Length: 400
Image (cartoon, rainbow, N blue to C red):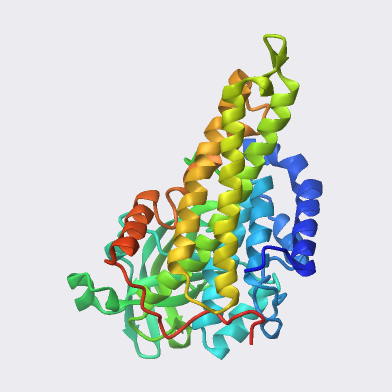
């Protein structure tokens, strides 16, 4: 593995960093305080080529490698987690899944406009009674001639009130639903404009306040058979595949949050003086900043390794899960320590570290809780877990 970034990767890093510092950083405090999602961010991200960054050019994307995707996510979350969340659900969970599992017709109708930023997409798995327990899903898809009728509710959906297209998972075999047999789940592309679809915003959350999070309901929504992704019964495999891609973006983003905590703490530690010296001179403050630095370097190496494996076309569920688990737990620790370094000021909205702390908590819950990932990694070591390759895999870079 070559740890030196290519010229193209460095250009991604520089352009996203400069855009975030110029266009978003000066406004993010006010957006977060107002619990306001700024839809103008999406066309700017599209103009940078971010919404289809790792989609091949033949499908409307920028055709960049998966490490470039990770670098972009790190830089976006350095500014605010809400920016990286867009990449997770649109580029990771949806677009890369359609790239691997979609038919040519689905790629033409959905992946191309999504990669070009003409349409926005998200992912619909979580429900009021189903999170880590995917088999607890209650949404059903009843076959009716050349269409399916979907009924159910999804919640904690990023971009719920913004997205045009939704990758939705539902039981298409009701007998298997009763048996909790995941081979009865299927995946569908649902458009917002389909009759019976409705959505709303969740206002009770206390983190990622500048991001849109909500729910959507399906009331006998008619979905054409050609919008079935994969074959009937492959929904669980597709959902797990999608989570592999989403977790990669979360890991890279959390790495950016660690760096943001480190930089904010370093700056404050050199400005604030107690007992006649900069607080950076105090050993316990140094200890917290040193931990942030070691966590940042380790988290970055873990997600770069996963990206390297993706570039080679190799399955990397284990490596991606480890990167996601380590980086998100480390980002929560870094954010807590950043507040501590700032002392009373860390408890004030005047400084960004309180926002970092609130934002960090979500990532140790969504896309596999830290507890789920602990069990997974232990099972790998113990030999209890073996990932069997599905019939679909991301194309190696350069994408063919």
